[in-house]
Image (cartoon, rainbow, N blue to C red; front, side):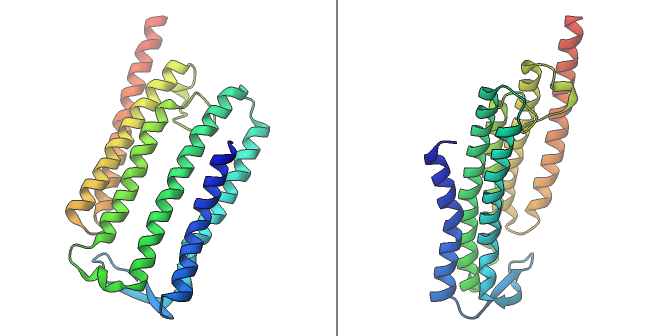
Length: 228
């Protein structure tokens, strides 16, 4: 991993904890809104120190990623250049996820400090969360077709693992499905503005991935038949 990218990931993993520390020790009251119902109103209050939960998860996840990445480099039986390319793509994905974690963390700190913002019928939290999920899936969907055949990331079903061409067909189809699901998440969040957006997102994800898998399987099976 490039030093600049590893430094960026470390900074992004620590920023939520720094922001939480500033909010907890200088801004928040001792008791804050700790959970919100589907209608956006607080249904549980708790200690302000709960603000450190997401930052702690972010730091632990980043440390685990660095350890797993090093293990993959040492144990991979694939071509080194192929492994490094896939790991570089995975680095980009993790960096994007860390950025989104930072966005979510800031918004959580805001609503914990000022829960009144959630009482609006057009609550922004669902728009923010659905948009974060949507952006993540759109980015992942665009990255997926760029991966090379491997045993680490991507669509790794048996029917598409025999050649690079078949790998690309399956991953491109599923990548498009993820982009569609991401768009559905963003649009449904903007329209319904409540927790039910997740139902529309999950339905679109299941349907689009099912269609993408069936389509890629049919194309790959046809290619194999033509070559026999």
